[in-house]
Image 1 (cartoon, rainbow, N blue to C red):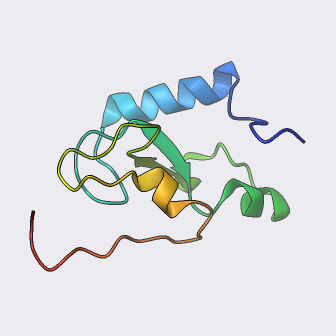
Image 2: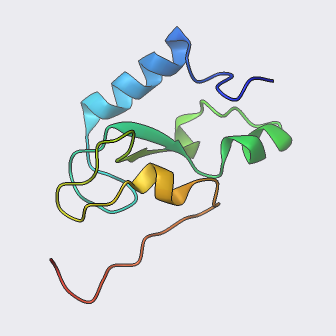
Image 3: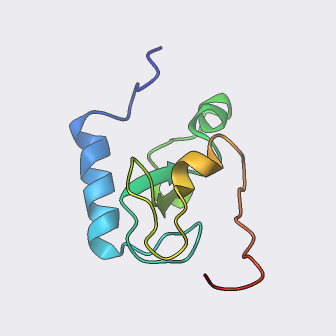
Length: 95
């Protein structure tokens, strides 16, 4: 199976566009400006469990793809990687 299998077709683009049109609030860091959709749990795990990786209950908005969060500077989707239940712990103060 190709690395991008299931994430480049029209259905995937439609789901991403719909979710980002509803809100750009990043589900990982909590700041506005999310530009990607992140699978949580990871897509590979969803497929192992024979669950639909395009089911919105497993999708989270996130910063990424070269567009870092303007508030915290994180590239949330890439930081989360394939970690299940990934949560970014807030720092000791706002920078």
